[in-house]
Image (cartoon, rainbow, N blue to C red; front, side):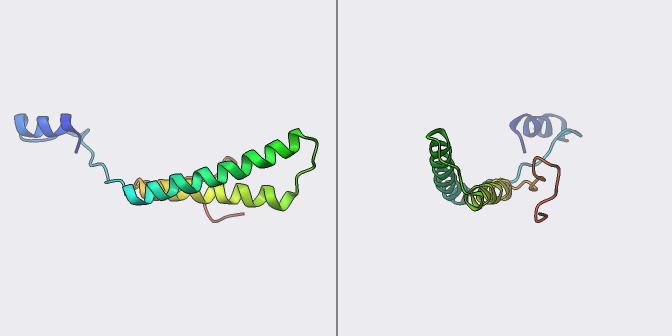
Length: 96
């Protein structure tokens, strides 16, 4: 419960209709995810560097990087107690 809702509950006996409980974040999972996010970001940076040097990137590498990014994004949502969203094309998780 937010501190303002807690104060309303103490003062008025009710937290009010806006009060919402926040799910606790899984800090251990978030630290692991940040490490993985750095690894994926490094891979994407290496692909971008190769493209800037004139190399043609391999499509499987790009697909793997995108898949890793989407998995990390969904895992971060879960660690924060939120529901994973769809991708940028409005598809739900698990769909290709």
